[in-house]
View 1 (cartoon, rainbow over the protein chains, first blue to last red):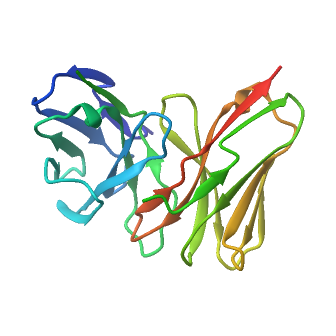
View 2 (tube, each protein chain N blue to C red; view 1 turned 90 degrees about the vertical axis):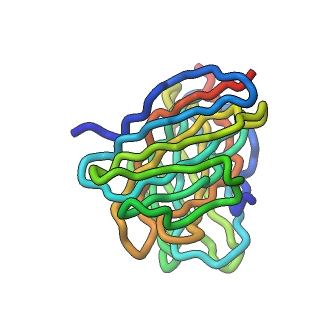
Length: 114
Length: 110
């Protein structure tokens, strides 16, 4: 049973460019959340997708957008990249339920903005 | 903003010793979770403790929760080199939306 997979694992962009990161959730999971983790910090919640809709959003600007596809996979898009967007981007999947349960994380996409 | 705050920020011990990490949080919770992260990789769920539980065990892990003090602790007994990682506590702030602390970096010296 494949866990959460993310691609690409590493990428380098320059300021002003745009980036798309991809995530396939664990089999059977229907909810995908994205987190940003700066070096030495804990993960920060960006947004969450369920039933192809953005259900919750953290304190991130509109430059950060996403999408969920009918097969539950998801994309994170970041426009007009800034140096401060350099981070590890983590995707997490879960079942939709009322109480927060265990999240399953991918290995992340390491973005470097030059 | 960070809900949980781990203490200490870094901890270095000898293999075989016990490691204790603490987490404090600000608002009332339904549950609290602990995750481990090996350097630069994804997070792995370790244990979830519900607000009506005071202590929970999983293998060499022991987690306590004191809701009156808004704090939790993670104890790793008989530490091994493979336990070297960062450890995060997390609380929920919405359906499956977790808020993480800054983590404790644990180093096990052989």
